[in-house]
Image 1: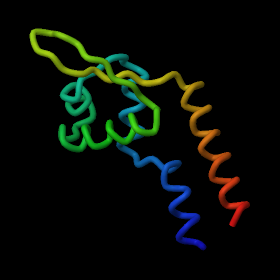
Image 2: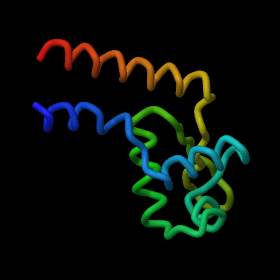
Image 3: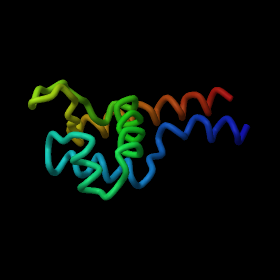
Image 4: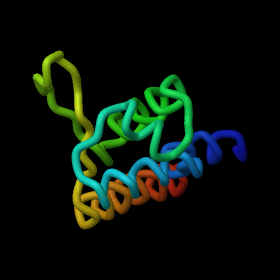
Length: 100
């Protein structure tokens, strides 16, 4: 049962670099992978991995841009929206735990 609870809680737990990426996007607005990596002194590979998780969880969004090249910029969702997302996920976890 403890393993199941841990699995249910995983989507609610963010690592420090994911939190820092969200924070920097919130502060600076639109940023590319390279800009985030440079700002936070992380590899682009790590930044891409963390961005994928944040996208999947709904904490950020991305859009295609043309700046002499075609690529993505990432944008933080508003804190109020993120809070709603986390609350809803937590409600689902509590419901599932209560159903055990």
